[in-house]
Length: 61
Image 1 (cartoon, rainbow, N blue to C red):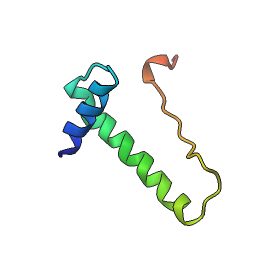
Image 2: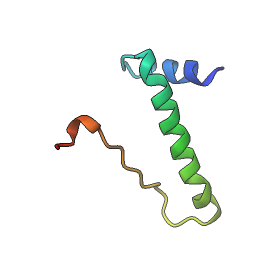
Image 3: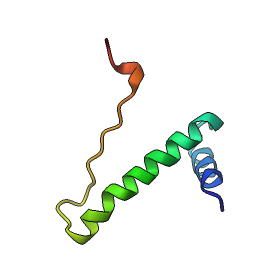
């Protein structure tokens, strides 16, 4: 299954609206999270991977 189809299907299962323009961003975010987990698999520090997602709309100038 293609990655974007998998993301679309997974979001639909959770009842989340799917916007085609968001799929590359979501894919990039998931890829980044997976890359962050790689070193922790070799040298585990915690069970959870810390990650912060910033919504640019929430930032004030």
